[in-house]
Image 1 (cartoon, helix red, strand yellow):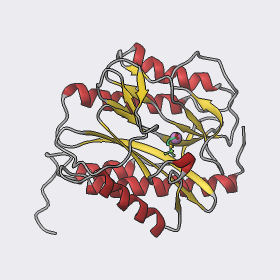
Image 2 (image 1 turned 90 degrees about the vertical axis):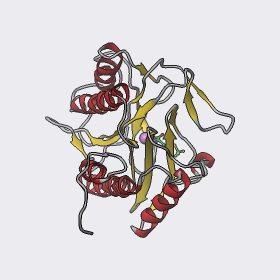
Image 3 (image 1 turned 60 degrees about the horizontal axis):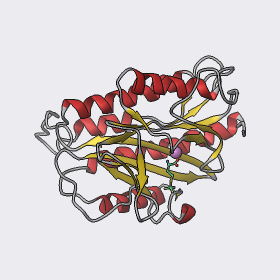
Length: 271
Ligand code: MF3
Ligand code: CO
């Protein structure tokens, strides 16, 4: 478990925010008809334009700069040339290395008005991320984060919590100790110390928790083919209140202004 100095955390804040801004750029581009391969190209270019390296590209042989996971794909979806369509649920996960420090986070979008079932799943998964983050304070244990996420999603709403994939420590490496499962017992696991940076990332299924990996060796899908949602933040453990290094504000702002995502968004009369 590697504790970061304040100077290192300052670097990690910049890395996390570059990912946030990349996702905000994508939030403005999303529409029915665009392909996830086009989005991946935009993401790659945006990261390079900001003097950073797309960290997923070639990570254990991963062949793209982002993971774009549509509908029943849980995570690690390959960008492809199939156009997105109305009603698609799209999780986008982006990683960068900026000045040697990693940023890694994710957000889930929907093209057009989602069904109540889907909008609830999206809302509850995002809520569960913040409930987990609340527990990322000195003296708590990893299991307190895990328990909070599982309580809100599985116990309260009956969703499937993916067991095979977990959150993780983040720093000069994309994956550091400790692992941060989205299920577990309160008061269990490693103790949290101030300056520990975690990528907390609930992966929550509308249906059952079971998943499988495609022939390509990466794409993780739900066994029951129902929709899955993924939100991820980079978080620094602090004494009284966790510090969220990444920022959904620019993503949510871009999302709300995109008429292709929110048909009720204000119409822009003048360019
Ligand atoms: N955010 C994911 C994770 O933390 C994505 C990394 S997988 C990669 O595990 F291969 F695409 F890099
Ligand atoms: Co991650």
